[in-house]
Length: 240
Length: 78
Image (cartoon, rainbow over all chains, first blue to last red; front, top):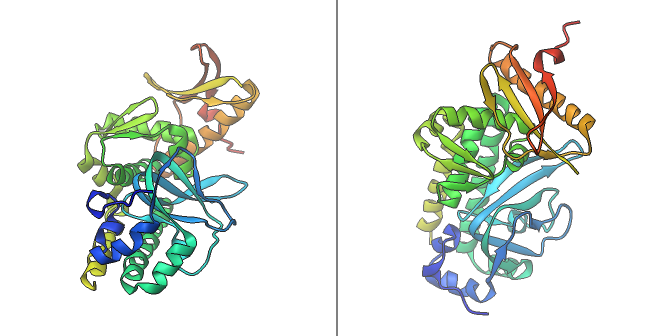
């Protein structure tokens, strides 16, 4: 297994580590591809690996007999496996890939050992988990107070941030699941965003045209969690 | 399973469902449309918009309109 080089890495948490911290972790990081609908974490089952996403998108999903709703979104800014950071190996939530890509994964036991040994690593990953809590809080706020168009605008912005390409591979089906709405709600909202020139909808794809307008529509549901992530990451790097 | 498309006719505009849904039969498609219509009506109500004027055109993969569902028919006033 070839050792990843920190300079070639996209994952922002791994990049934020001091070189000697990264070098300690590197032998245990395995490059893997992550496929559409792959479950990185299965509800209730012991988590085998944490995944530092390099490219692609993972949804954290609350599953019930009524349906599914996305509660969190993870891309190259984060890692999947927050429960491991917090001292447990299971979660009732599902972690499922929504856009395929690649990740660097580490076995749960290796991550546990690395966290025990390194305050700096705990500092980076712990702050990421805090940023995730803030993100989920924003989702709660958005779902309570904003209509489908605004929530869709927010979600498109968040996906755009993580995939870093204007052409987002998304179907109406997956968007409906992620927003917790009926699919015609997505079709209707997509039409409204398109008519306003914010996006162009194609079969299986959403193309971002105007971030400014999307941000206007999303209002203050988008922004606070993103700013908090940047603040926390800077703080983590500040204390070496 | 057959694929049904739920296009929304709003006055002169047709909002196309690009992907469709796989459902067992037309009855299931009608039920899916009813759920979708209730959702869209609720959004319009919250926004203070007119509730009339929209309908689902449930269409086959070949583009044949199989059924219409007027949103206003789902509003129960009594």
